[in-house]
Amino acid sequence: MTQQPLPNSVKEVMDGMPTAFQPDKAAGVNATIQFKFTGAEEGNYIVKVGDGKCEVNEGETEGATVTINSPSDVWLKISRRELDGATAFMSGQFTFTGDMGVLMQMGSWFGQG
Image 1 (spheres, rainbow, N blue to C red):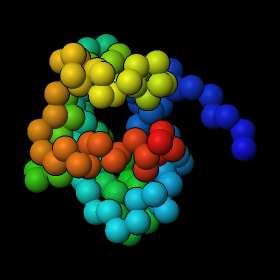
Image 2: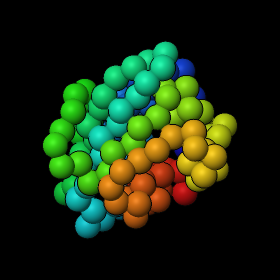
Image 3: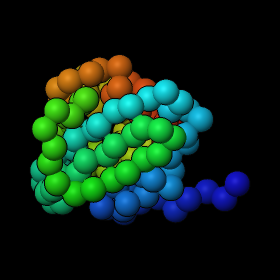
């Protein structure tokens, strides 16, 4: 298995999510994740996981299962595995609202666990 090059931007992270998605790890999952990024790469993304598929769109949605509010550079470091997500959360580097279970499992759906 070839190692994917590390993303250099949050847009690359978001664009790469459907490719990195591992449907077997997310069997039975039906979740909508709202990302709200601030900082260098401000923007909002909606990630829908369900029926063995992952779809990413720019924008905002009502009723997300979990909403993640993060500076873009922090999320990029987490995605590059330069920063542990749990550590970043515990130290207040990003916040979320909604279902913590989805937040905890999410990494494994994208080959991080």
